[in-house]
Image 1: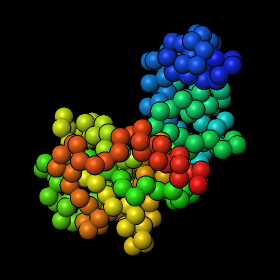
Image 2: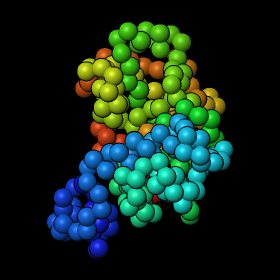
Image 3: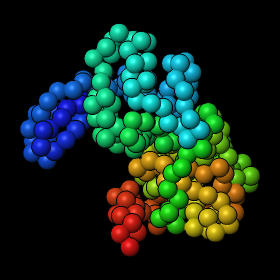
Length: 232
């Protein structure tokens, strides 16, 4: 459920997490999920299917995107710019970015884009989920993109485990020495709330975490560390 509190802004759920008021209804869960799938498809994979022009940094014009959605599906005839803003501002993964009259996805692309994302305040360690079948190969040859243009790394063990469970019930987690990788000349970008992207991770920067309780920050601790770095 997506709603708007007139005092505290957009939120997902039945009541504003700040004042516990219901606020103004914007869309139900089915509509939110449906539009989310459309946005992911258009902004990451196939803008041409919606007859949209995307620049080399992944931006498309908001009004053109909304008109294209109207043309493709009468189901979303009510969809307006404030609905799009609400989706973006409440997205827990920070998958989208709005700038002026433009919108783009910040990661997950299967098409060629050159995203000008932040490269400062990158954590010293990042994490990557894999499977028992793939781990030896990754440890030997490094991590390279598969169905995406970039390798996606996670802020914490917890976030990587959640991402990995999309594929397998018990993913293995690789720890990435991001600090040394950057010193060696590899660019790592901050793409989403807990997502970082890079072109590849050479094997010498990869360490297999054999136990879940090895020293690695929780998602909350990792986010707090990021906030402290940003304030320095």
